[in-house]
Length: 321
Image 1 (spheres, rainbow, N blue to C red):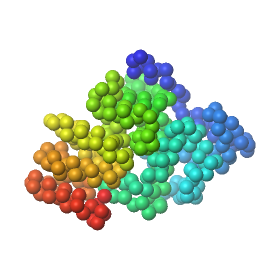
Image 2: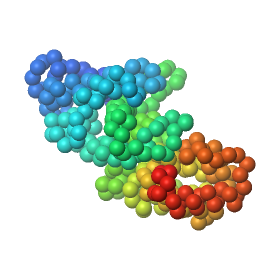
Image 3: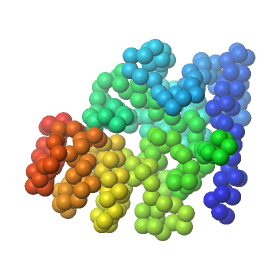
Image 4: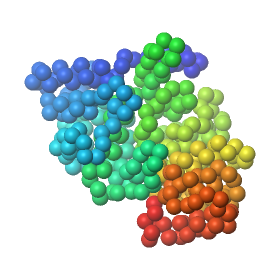
């Protein structure tokens, strides 16, 4: 089966429209309702779901910002350990299905240890105890997942949405558009030991899968993991890059969005293999756009190498990562 045939067989209606219609029926009926997924949702849970679905038709529609009225509203709606409440967990089951709901929950719970800034001027700083930052990131994370995988047709401006397994999302990541935080769900699935998933990533990295190709999301998913075996796949990819400066740059640009353990591991890889001799590595370090932003241009190899060693040896004490 070709990629085109598989995608045609997986087309579904716009999930956002379907979710809105079904949740509105629950809210307006004032009763517990059975939805197409076979799960029951309480009225207050359905209302929370509708708040998540209040997206506008623009590029920034998924995002709430710190201090906004939307953020204040969600602060009142989102209670601590919200997904431990079975009634609210049913909402994750409704949105994502039984298997994926568990991975979404795990990814949500990991967000306190992830960087809290985003955009091109972000820094790799964490703020695990800052509840306001965390809430904004958690809501934006969940909202970004609701569309699911899709493909935009530029010829007639149509959009096709797909119901794909995690394996197919990963395998066809270069053929479709996965949401920007989907890699976090893949990482949670990897660390949960989902059968065959590590093998799929390994096959794609080593070009053994007949369809899958290395993508930015795949690299980020491996580095966002908490398991060293996943970081090692990226290490092998980095060391095998040779003259592929673009590949090296893609890997380094993803380092700020990794787990802290992966960042520590990959910094050591840069040091041990003297990778600051490559222009893409130097560019990422001196630009500081996705790192800490403290270096200047035209620094020598020796200075860059020494700086990396200081970071690696003192990162916990200096709180740079």
